[in-house]
Image (cartoon, rainbow over all chains, first blue to last red; front, side, top):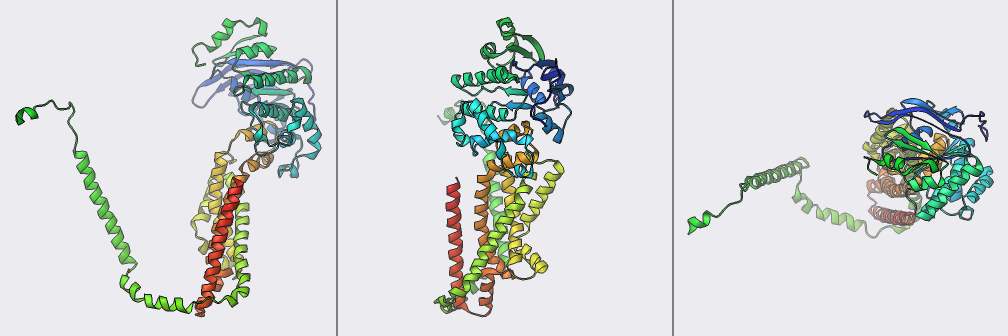
Length: 259
Length: 272
């Protein structure tokens, strides 16, 4: 896999078509959701608990398979792949979670270097050696999130906000074309939240990634998103620019659902 | 007046006493059952307390003949002691080396397939349920007398305990880093070595040190079936009625066991 996947002109980096997700119990989590995120765009998905927004992200990340429909990242279909082909396809997609999910006992730099494992497959890296050639790149990624001074520190010693930024650096080290964020600020204080959201903005605007971010806070979506998608009971309720999004439309997302 | 007192309003629901009398009957039954079990075990082992008393003189005789311990034997018993420790070390290291991959297969959250999960659980259960002495007997017939069969026996028996504990550690592990690395496109082996191994390493070392302590005790006994080390020396000295050597060996064993226990505990404390 090369560093930059070619992108066909006119196609969006993240593209989902009529995704349907029915869980084993018969519950319908997604009911025909389509969306597209172009490069350089930060799109926020809003929705109540159980609206299907995490499922949507997990399908695009290739963690779960949809019942129907397809998801493409950089023109490559993720749904339906398994094993090595799936691992290869995932390299184009970076993902961050509610928790930073760092290996706490390893250094910050080692955690960031883990983002480069996909394109450095060798016996040595399979046995736990980190690719030494990637250190300069990993340091640049850490500098990008303002954590280069913490490189040698154990990841477990970082604050919540720092850890989330380190997780973003790990995703950047992957050199992805798309970045998925699943409630990345849900457990952060306001300052750290602002830092992480500004970083996501920067990643989209300056590095040209397609960023798809699931959030719980409408005010953050208004402030940072290029577009807002409202998801309600597995159906796309609206898709609009922040200045076009009305309070009524947002409130409707949370009606009758535990907030 | 007593008539009146009796006509005081009673609680609406009748008080239920029978429950207690029933449980008292059960208590009696349990005590009876316990006594039956105790008496039958006494009969089966042919317990004869009287002989323990008359035999006390014989024991005192042996003890007097074992005293003082023959310390001149000490230099030539150092090698068997060293052998005993190394049997345990070898057994522990190879036990961990076999148990760790098995544990990954035997943990619900990391096993690649249900078939492998049950197979790994089965292997671990067999290793554990067959005592190390039996393993030693098997390996002595396979590779002959000496410390090597002892080391093999300890490896295999350790896998039983190590595999089960390590699988539990892996099952309790935080899956966040695992999932994060999976989404970066890392291969399965890379995910294990870069996310699972660093996460469980401290627990793994702690369990291994604990097992090393147990293995030193096990390796002392293994000498009795011809698997070398200090146990074999003890057996030989007993057979030759060299009780002063026996007492020296018992002291050495005591020091070894206590030393290993202390060292293992101290190292585990530093890990935590």
